[in-house]
Length: 302
Image (tube, rainbow, N blue to C red; front, side):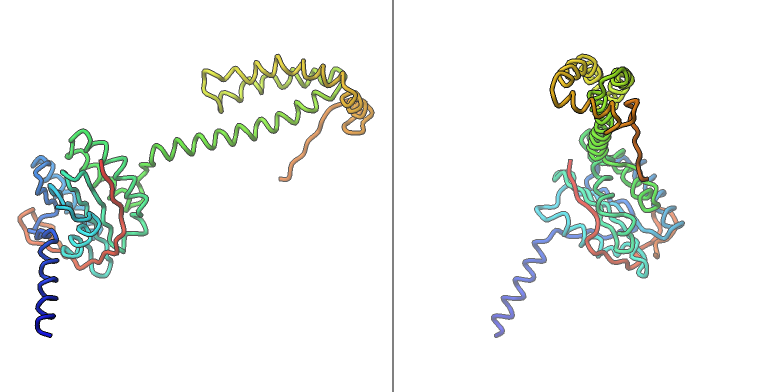
């Protein structure tokens, strides 16, 4: 029994030793163990985070490492946040920005009290839009500063860094749907113009030409904007002639003329329904306020 207990204890000890050690807080909000930030950037970030914590009680810390030594950034980030106890105990309003330079990995770990405003999706956008582009240029000063500014803005509901790919996809989808709706509407009038035999049919044809020529500019690439309008101008008369020569077209034309499907004049009407961290200098003593973390946030790379 003692042997089993000894083996179990050794396994636990080995597991603990295998994990990457979590550094002490050492009275600093910015820990640049990889030495990638300029000293003036570190000092500016310390002052910014100190002032922000004084005005809101939210506690944000930064840890930059060379490598995670094979450990998952999600697991290590959570261990750091829990050991540092970022955020106030009753508010759980702490945030950890963790960067592993050699691993090209980064994560924003969010306390449970801020998960409602600093969502996983918003953290992911901050990583992709603010950090990754700067890190690819090896400009860690700009990337980290932009990340902190965006995190603070995100907590305050002021971050507007929508993902460019999301915007492009949404814009393209919206343009296609709007274009289909417009052409469906114009198609109805073009259909009636084909069936009306007298001058009103040709009047509607001329009336529709500007619409088929203008609206494509909102849907098609600029170099192709003229194609729908030109196609309508050239093809409509041919199709109308073919329809009027057919028995079905003649029959429908007579119904329009007699008012069976439209008004006597051939016009068409339509209707619709309508802490405890101190506020002193970087050398003053402070510690985490006892906040808790539940794994909220997002990870990314560059």
